[in-house]
Amino acid sequence: MEKQSLRKAYGEALVEEGKTNKDIVALEADLGKSTMSCLFKDAYPDRFFEMGIAEQNMASTAAGLALAGKTPFISTFAVFVSGRAYDQIRCSIAIPNANVKICGSSCGLSDFGDGKTHQSIEDGNILKTIPHMTVLNPVDAVEVKKMVKAMIKHEGPVYIRINRNDLPVYTSAEGEYEIGKMHRIKEGKDVVIFATGAMVWKSMEAAEILAKDGISAEVVNVSTIKPLKKEEVLKYTAGKKAIVTAEEATKIGGLGGAIAGLLMGEVNLPFEQIGIDDEFGTSAHSYEELLVKYKLTEKDIAGAAKKALKK
Image 1 (tube, one colour):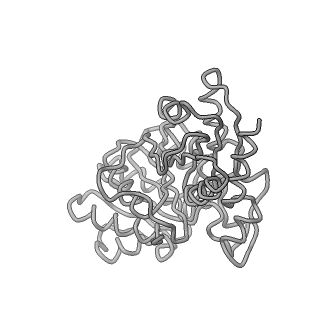
Image 2 (cartoon, helix red, strand yellow; image 1 turned 90 degrees about the horizontal axis):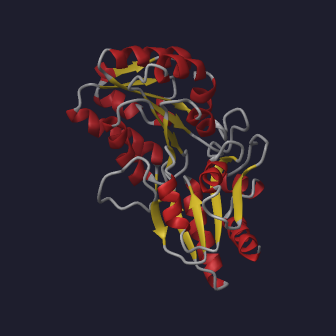
Image 3 (cartoon, one colour; image 1 turned 30 degrees about the horizontal axis):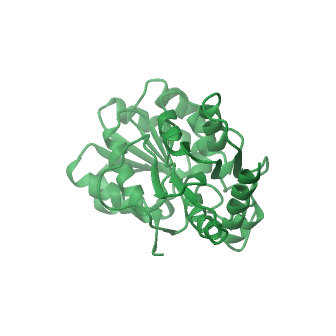
């Protein structure tokens, strides 16, 4: 399938929305060429603020700009924004419900060459615990562009996770993104796979493996991590024999646990979770190498589905 850059899509979306919305401003922490906020800088230099390697100051400044009526987008690596700037995001942005949009780029294991200090497997899990915070995890470049529009329309803080690598496109260009809504990528009757981010791609490949064994798998794109709506989950579990969740993040406090919590007392089905155990990332020669190491491949997802169906 065609693959596109989510980072480039993010930068292009900011530029496009900035044409008509003069209140949009962008702040960067010395990583504009990686996050692609540099595209906004080139288009609107008077609305771009280079904050240097100072994520805490960037978050606090963005809060002030929001209180002054602007719509600030702050961008840096996911590991830095969720770690270094947590207190400022919590106290200066979330508590006053400031209209700040936060981009955590190179999320998950996607920065494969830089090891555990740069691979952010916990960022979304951390930030979703903060009241008022909406957390998005797009599947592809098309969904990124739709999400940016939805982020601007949404009043309050929003966090978007951006994968560093080019990913296959599954999202239709038609329609708008609705925060909280899940999207069926593939229909199936035996097992439902709730996947998010890059794991949608791997879940689609897993569905092909399962089909060869006569197992019909439904793949659902969960691109809104918070709010996670019970009615959406129940809609896709109806009539299924088993459930699998797949996320490129730590299992602790992740999507799998959140879905299991929503289903408690509602649905009694075998359940398997694909995600990263209680450990950090590591350096590798390729992204795929890390997906194999942390058991996030299509074979692992297919194996989890088979295991659940045997219970």
